[in-house]
Image (cartoon, rainbow, N blue to C red):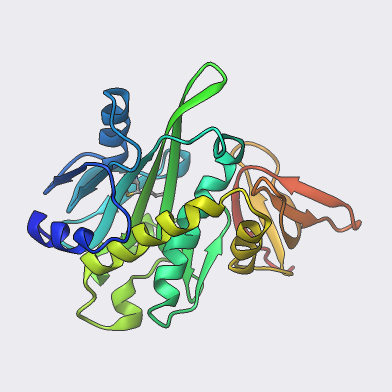
Length: 261
Ligand code: BTN
């Protein structure tokens, strides 16, 4: 995607974005968006790149974006006073918009809490939300989205933490990155006014992978938690039911289906 194609696809967005910075190649669009925000970027400003050479994922993982194969972008939000109590829902905002954009293409997308979008149980997109605070007040939030569009975006198996796939694998050749980008951004814009509502949580919950299944949640150094995946708390935390029937809330970690002994 070059800058002209990008402009063409974004011109069809129902609501205006802020400014757009396009790069043929960059380290990380999230890093650029954080620096730009610190320099005063407006709400809904967008950084997009055709290639990332130092893309970042959660938990200090690397994210690969080979040239010409993927979507890699970062959207800057300056949350309003009404949105500030719902910052923990922002990852859901992005995940829902990505999943919706795939569902409108006839695909059965699911969200692997908190930040992955799956197709047929394999990861097609990852989301990295980073925020900067002044004391107890959030200044800005950067939503970074990486989506494997073509097969060439999927790293080799030995580099993967979780099986991965691409849109091309499901839809065949000819997927237009600009159109997918436009749909995701339009989805974020449309969902944003509803971020504080119960129906937002219900829509997010409906898309969750592994519901009613036994899962394990690994949270870095902590002992993994296990239980049946029930759904979401109102702040977007994960609700499990432990073996002794107690309700457990998980705020951080990676979910996997639990291996049966
Ligand atoms: C993850 O799965 O751990 C999150 C991956 C997020 C990758 C995107 S690509 C665009 C943006 N820039 C980055 O450096 N990371 C995010």
